[in-house]
Image 1 (cartoon, rainbow, N blue to C red):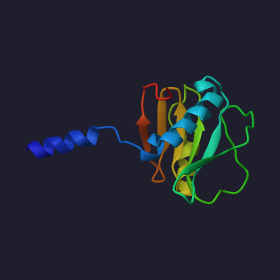
Image 2 (cartoon, rainbow, N blue to C red):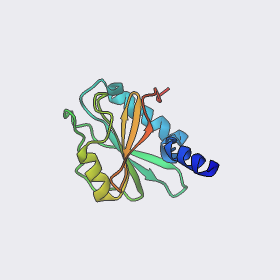
Image 3 (spheres, rainbow, N blue to C red):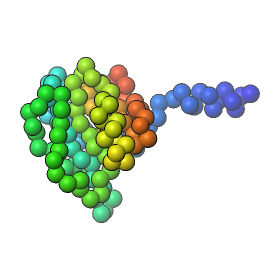
Length: 138
């Protein structure tokens, strides 16, 4: 009985996300959030997260289109794509239906950043809280 209680409790703990907690990736998340006005702007900033040959990560920032509630990319998908990350206004903390569709279609996670949240739409169509209701960008 004790093991079943421990397993039940463990399933309720927040999932950690190694990519989002990588120091280089985390620092770039903060930079992207800053460019997006810490969630106070209605425009979005976006980037590809790419795995380099040496195992590290680099970001390919999308051109800023000045569109409200939207980030577009019209080029080719880069080699080594690990994930897509973009900002949302603070009023839209979770991935949109379009974000979930992009994650499924490309088979890659789509991260959404706001001042107090990091959510990810997985390639399986799930929405997972990486950080919820906590100031993560310090």
